[in-house]
Each structure stands twice: as C-alpha cells, then as structure tokens.
Length: 341
Length: 155
Image 1 (cartoon, rainbow over the protein chains, first blue to last red):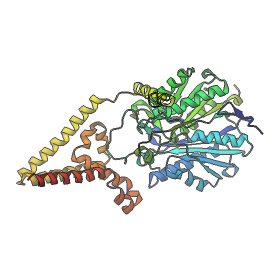
Image 2 (cartoon, one colour):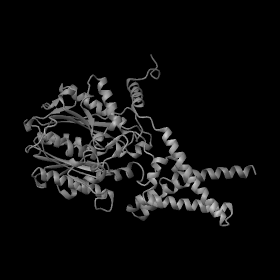
Image 3 (cartoon, each protein chain N blue to C red):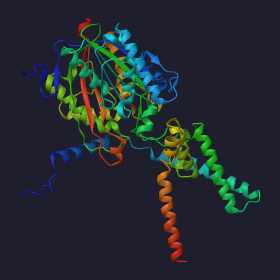
Image 4 (cartoon, helix red, strand yellow):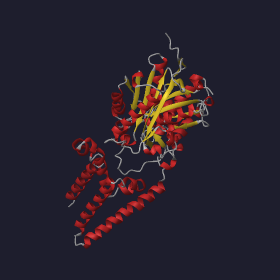
C-alpha cells in the first residue's frame, strides 16, 4: 500500500476535505482592546478570569473556548471522537486539565506556538482517514503563566528589547469533521525542525522564520501552487521581524509573497499597545484563526488561505545551557470552495 | 585533502548568512533613549536617597547609621511600589537606572515573592524569593571575601 494522499515531500492532500463547522475564541482584556477585539466570542474583563491563579484562569479559558466551539457546531461533547489540545505550560497542564473536565478521548500535543496548526493537520488526517467524524482542536496561552515560566516574575522591573513579543492571553478551539457547514481543509504541509543558530530567547521571530520559510517553500514545491493562488498567507506568531525575514527567505527560493503575507502576531495587537514586535503564544494563532480568519472566510473576504503555525521549540533550561532555538512551521490550506459564491 | 575547518560547510555558511540577514532586519535598540531614561530615573532615585541621607543626618544620626537608614527606607519604598505594580512600569523607562540602585535589588526580591505566593510559603515564596537576587548575593559574598582577604594581607 502506498501513501496515496501524499503530495511531494511533506504535503498531504485530502480526498474528502474535513470541514471546520465550529470555532470559538476567548481572549484577555489587552487582546480585546486590540484591532480584532470585536471578532472574539468572549473578552475577559481581567486576566485572572475569576480564579485564584493564572494557570487556573488559562484552563478555564481553554475549556470555555472548547464548549463554545462544540455548541457552534451544533454538537455535544459526546459527538466528538477526539480532542487534540496543547499549550505552553510544562506538561501541557492547561490541555490535560481541560480534557479531564470535558471527558472526550484526548491526544495531548506540544508544538509550542504551532500547536493549533499541528492539531488542525493531525485532526484533519484523522477525519479524512476515516477514524473520526468530529475532532476538537484547541490551544491556549496566557501572558502571565508564560512569563513566569519562561522569563521573569510579572512585577520584576525589566526593559523588554524591541525584538520581544507579547504572549497572547487567549484560547481558540475549532471542530473539524466530515459534516457541517464551514470552510474546508484541503492540504497540510508538515514542517521540519529548522535551526539556523539564533539563541536569543527575546527574539523568537528570527528563530522561527527559517522554519516558516522552509515549510512555505516546500508547500509551493509539493503542490505546484504559487503565492498568488492564495488570498492570504498568514503565519502564526512570527511578528514583525520574523515576518520580514520569512519574506526575504522565501524570495531567495524564487517565490514572492510580499503582497499577501502577514502574521497573526501582527494583526492581534496595535503598535500603540506597546507589545514591541507583536503577539506570540499558542493562543495567538488559535484566536486569530477562530475569531478572525474563519469568520472572514465565511463572510467571503478570503476564499483560500495558507496558514502556517509557527513554534519556537525552546525551554528555559536549553536557553540557559546555551543551546540555539529550533523552530517549526506546519502549514494548513483552508479553502471556502464548498461555501459557494 | 582540503582541511575541513578552513572551508565552512553549507550549513555553517547558511547560518552565517542568516545571522547577517537578521542583523540587517532587526530594529536598532533605542540606545540614546535608554541611556537618557537610565540617567534621569537612576539619578532621581539617587537624589531621593541623598535627600533621605541628609534628613537622617539632620536628626542627629552619624553618617554611617544615616546611610543604613537611607538604604532601609529606599528598600521599603521600592517594595511597596513593586507590590502596587508600579515599579515595573518605571523600570520600563528607567532600565539599568532602576536595576542598579538598591531599589532594584528590593524589586528583584519582592517580585518573585509575590509571584510564587500561590505555590505556598515553603516551596513558593521560601524557595523562589532569591531566584533573581541569588546571583547578586552569591557574587556579592565572593567579592566581599576577596576584598577582606586583600585588606588582611596588605594591612
């Protein structure tokens, strides 16, 4: 038996493209004040979300996004065959504890900030492969939980460099399935871990850009498509510096994406919000996808998009031991061909 | 046989070229603004410290005792400002100007103490309180010991 759905080196084309029938986003107050504020389903009044700790606040947010997504797909948790989720905290506790509450067969994922797209790719494979009718994919991050794990206590007085990004407080969830109404996932390109030696944990955009570029280039090679075949090419959390670098790297390979390439981390915050390079975190691509991109696709603004979830695969331990930061990018093609128009 | 070390491999070359691209693309750090912020805010903290010193001396304390009282007062103020969530907002502009004075040391102890309170008093506050100040203390002790040794030898 050969892999009939494999296209070229790293891309997979679905025979029956899974449909995204429900999507939900829950964000913190700062994200709510950003340019996409009105697109999110729930904007929390504060980052503690009625809980005693930020970790609890994060998982409550993740759970709420999952529940709304299932509800929007007109389903109940019993209809979902698999839940795939991940987050940035050690041992992915936000996802694990949420899965405990929802009682859906669970596959925990860790792809750093690429988790949402990693989940979309795997979930779509399960659906197209005939293993599931519905898969719930979700991811979350929280500024305060990420800062204390990766950097400094919140009240510590430090000056953030211009390359630094701001971890998005937010959770996004989508339901992909064999049935339902919504845009479909037609292709995925699974990325390789790429490391070009960037070792500054305050500059993750530069660390991830080569991985994002590699996946984008490979996607064009595998599918024979060109940048103009997409209304929008959007990366997960490269932010302004990573976006600029990716554009240059992709150009070196002969593809010009300057006209239709942006990044979720650039869209989610306004420069006046003083986040420096832009947003980051699992929640960044998850909420922009669930809150903004899918809505605009349903509304007809974008017909076909190429989304690249990007992850910086570092840990505080590896950074302190002087290791460089490996990056990864997973690409997913979302197509609204089935919505008519 | 060519020497492998003389000719960079493709991978090494790729890394060098990428590093160049990153350097060109990255925004320059606002050095002038940072230096100015550190000077003004760091200077202001020191001026406040000097005012306290004069005040304590005017109350009749010897200079050495007045210095200790000044340090304690500054640490107290910085701890309160950290607790109120103000110190990190000042540090955003002050940079080194808020880290180097004794107020920065107070901030580096109070911030983790607040942060890890939720993990309990022993394994939270107790264990983590010196995570940031630890290196300052450790190398402070080493330096003090070395200076003590030099002073002893050349007395």
